[in-house]
Image (cartoon, rainbow, N blue to C red; front, side, top):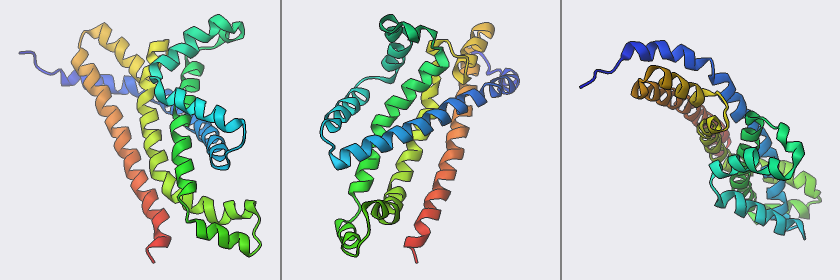
Amino acid sequence: MAILDVGYMVELLPILLRYLPLTLQMAALGMVLALALACALAVVRVLRIPGLNGATLLFISFFRGTPLLVQLFLFYYGLPQIFSALTQINGITAAIMGLTLHFAAYMAESIRAAIVGVDRSQTEAALAIGMTRGQLMRRIVLPQATRVAVPTLMNYFIDMIKATSLAFTLGVTELMGATQKEAAGSFLYFEAFITVALLYWGIVELLAWLQRRLEARLNEAYQR
């Protein structure tokens, strides 16, 4: 039975770490864009804006109901056939687009649920004392909704980091793409993939620790 080549794994780790910034950048940019889009979609869903509400439901249904890999291929290979302007799109841009729209669909429902979950009596009381709807959202609804939504949104960010591994199917040499190339050159597939798995695991555990700290901080005001 072959012995695990630990030496190769140790040598491979710094090589893979060179590609970690690209993975994190794609996830961070995708998260920012997805969060902005999700907030807009959630507001449309909460207010039930005529016309936009139906389009929003269709958007959420499509991006939640189809695999992320299919969406990435659609953006990178499919749409350029219809829109010639998209032929200039590269793999990184297509990956960020796919991550943004895919996770925005999920995050929109989480944000909507957090907003709707705020006790209606509080909103009625705020309006009764003369608060505008803008003040109501800023002072009453959003602080409470944020506390509820943050854990779920952090989980989506963790999922997004792992989902960036699909970008290598578009020719992007990120963390997974670099691992694939190194494994193909050395034929030490198990060592290469267990190394990148441990690296992803470490990143996720760090983010999970930060999430717990953030949750504790947000809950301080409710524990007094």
